[in-house]
Image (cartoon, rainbow, N blue to C red; front, side, top):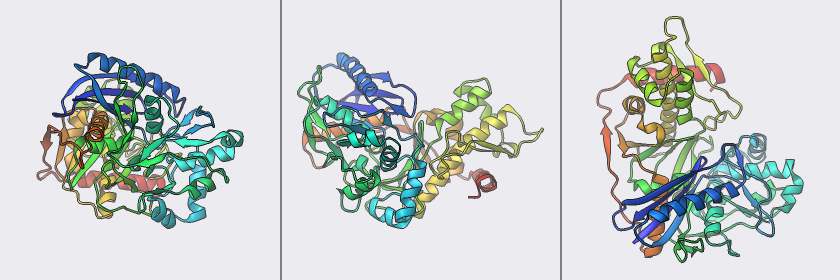
Length: 469
């Protein structure tokens, strides 16, 4: 049996055709999305149709089921006819930082963490809707329904039926959902939108059959409920207790499977649900792989060249520390921050040290995130390093010392799309648990590497010096 997994991410749509019995990818395709922090969702649908059409054309048989993993938090506001009211504000749009602060001041961080699993930052959907109500009231008046990106793409696959749906994983990133009760909090949404009460999608179980596809090429295929991209990646990786994922894509995400919901009033750990009925406490940064690509550009090289330069420098980068807040930052909550390089002298100002400082700075942010998960009681047995930047030899070599645990590098794959495919197979089968597909990779033991202690101390000192935290 063949299933189709879709990853509708910030930058592109990836489509994988997968053998449901073995987990083997038998066809794949990709189509780009436009840049920016606000995008017309029609661009996602155009890319999805292109990628799906290309992948299905390569497939050796009929597609029996499909599911969508999508970028979290994006605000897709629809009117009474189901048309988009305005371009979707994406997770990396920070204009709603003032509204996030207002929500926290009004309710208190402790109460919000207890009710929603989150302390609002500009990434979360509720803050974007509050921004819409305050800054575009005429548009806010037109909003009849609010969807998340994966909801909207899945709804298109089904031919835009009357009902809409979502899963508990992606819902848990909105700010108007309770991970404890598994229900929407419509009163939180209405308050954020100045009394307006748009409809919310139906919450479905992770293995639910949500609808039937009408898109040519996959007509009649079961549509799974879909989920957020981090939840889909966790499902695709088949995480076990103690497995902490560090994902180095456009953003950096660190998450771990958990049996109980978390409520971190510091706001560092987001208390998400996963795509299996469990929980997925997660720490997210706005800056990850782009830190390396931007540094490579400054040094006049590519990512492979940056990696070679970084490995020629000693741990600690000759005293350089890079705070990599190139796009503002979500964790720590510094939406207006910029990047800072500290410790610069005539002696250490070399391409090698700057390259290593970029790698160390990015990974120190991830190491802080791992510590934050530990503080919630999470077991950290090993780190699974995924995402585009995980393919860097320098990242693989430096990460174990900074993380303080063994690092496993799963073979390069589109794990969000694989997780969506696994969910599709699960929905089609009606089984109690998702299929178990093998994940190959290589291990990098931490051994007696203690170099990370001094590097992390210097990074923390730089952060305190510049931002007071």
